[in-house]
Length: 126
Image (cartoon, rainbow, N blue to C red):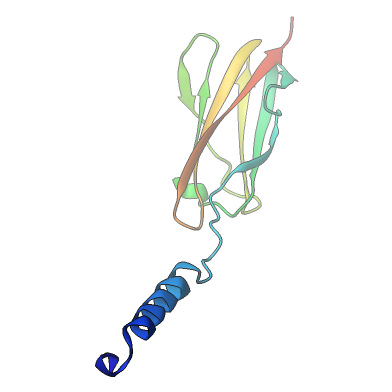
């Protein structure tokens, strides 16, 4: 069939097919990105018993996600994520002494992609 078309038409058909493939609609990527945290990024909380809360822009797989607390003395602790809660929120309770901390989060979004980030904050107290 292509043999009977002029060369210009063959190229037009090929270019149209490539354009249709390249510009077809793609599903939106739902990589989980942090939207809000308590404490906020760079914020502070009173030292003592604190519930850390991290809200993301998409549903996350709680069982395959991780929160790691980096303490002022450079030691680390994997935090126990609360098993229940909204599908876009991770939370964990921890006791904090005064100092500078970083929570490193790693989450698996429902789109199958893993994203990571840090939330630095300060625990204040006497």
